[in-house]
Amino acid sequence: MFMSTYRSKKAAGLLLAGILIAGAAAPAAEAAKEAPKVLVNGVNYALDKEPLVKDGRTLVPLRGIFEALGATVDWNQYEQTITATRGKNEIFLQVNKTKAKVNDMEIELSVPAQNMSGTTMVPLRFIAEALGTYCVYYADQNLITITDRVES
Image (cartoon, rainbow, N blue to C red; front, side, top):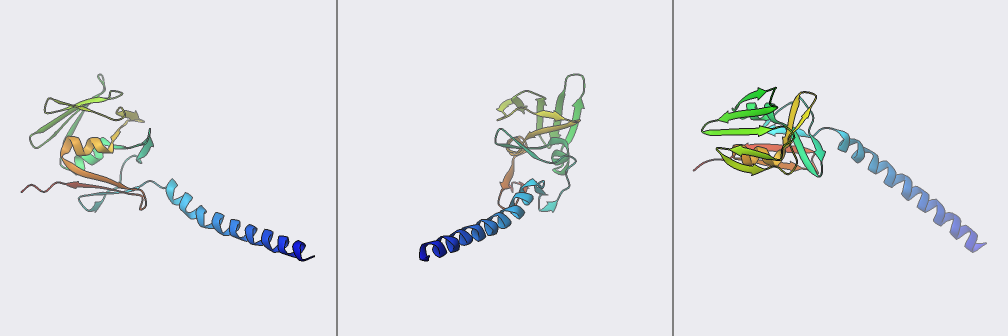
């Protein structure tokens, strides 16, 4: 009888623990489904397309972020290329290619630029390399920060 009661209490305890864990995990899973919040130089920026993860890399919309950082962006529909200018920097890349050029210096993209429903998505790291910014993704806060480097 003692063993039977012990097993019942143990089973009830395990069931309760499982319910509590599942309940706590649900909000975390729901938060992970939301698009990351994006701050450009400390200002909350609404993107025209949500960032996504592909092959372990965070892809973000190029035009909106480049323009928020003061770059001009030109799109060539026929060649599927982008030319962007910011200050003395000229950036050139082609959709579905893993190479880009910044001032004639070739940069390797970890995943190719993607055209997703008319929006060119590029790896977050490319933004930093192309424009000389700091880009950080804080997974625990579901937050992307993009900040200009301060020149001294």
